[in-house]
Image (cartoon, rainbow, N blue to C red):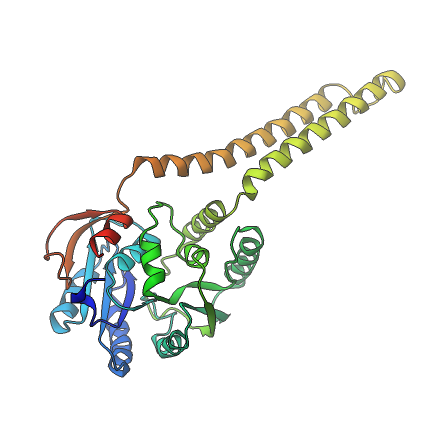
Amino acid sequence: MSDTNADIKYSLIIPIYNEEEIILEMYRRVSAIMAQLDESVELILINDGSRDNSLNLIRDLHTRDPRVCYLSFARNFGHQIAVTAGLNFARGQAIIILDADLQDPPELIPTLIQKWQQGYEVVYAQRLKRKNEGWFKRLTAYVFYRILRRLADVDIPSDTGDFCLMDRKVVDLLNAMPEQNRYIRGLRAWVGFRQTAVEFEREPRFAGEVKYTFSKSFSLALNSLISFSKVPLRLSSYLGLLSAGVALLMAILVLYWRLYQPNSPVTGLATIMIAIFFLGSVQLICLGILGEYIGRIYEEIKGRPLYTLAEVAGFTHFESNSVVSKSSSDRHQSFN
């Protein structure tokens, strides 16, 4: 960190995507918490290619409150990349990530800071209860987190999202990681350091529509499994061994039926078709698993920036209305 940023103690990062109904209430509650903090604080809002009036509201907040800084993507890049951009630009010694929908209560921030002051480098908020969410959402989330924790190479705490506080040293490490497919809560666990949880009950969304649809949630879950576990690759090997065993068993059975039960109804075309479909499905599953990993290798070797910025305001390093294209590692280097 440069000396010009040494006076900033806390950075609050909030990604925003089509949240015009929430922004003003979010700012009201967050600014009330900011007023309680004894040290200097910055609020970083990331406009993730919103198509509504969100960007204009963000600009107005920046004009009214110099503590509000913002980044505006040239298009929608997704929640995890928006969080990454906020981490790249954050200048505080403690960086706090929360969502704009107020399901992550800003009032929990002082508790996170207390834990950080006790010596923890990562303090994550752990959900005890999800209010006003359907049984399917609760069930799938419960199952996913436990499967991920069992299969992942690192210990990723269950029932935790991106709502957390991270020390400067942790954020610097995350910024130095150039990978394209990012799962922040997994990377947060991977870096290590002293970590602890603060439990809370998740409130329903304040207003607007849910941005993490089932397809987006499934894509994030798939990305997390592939990014932090080699088990899917091993699964293809296990399926290959299983299919080989089943094929051998069927060959023995067919030989037995041919020799001792030539008129058995299970011999002939039906048996052949079952074997073909079984082996074909195993091969397609294995190819699909390999394809997911190869696709991520392809994304990495292209070396494209994680995001492009159409507008930047509130940061001394860039002027507003500039067009910026930076990878995570490039941003990290430019701030050191």
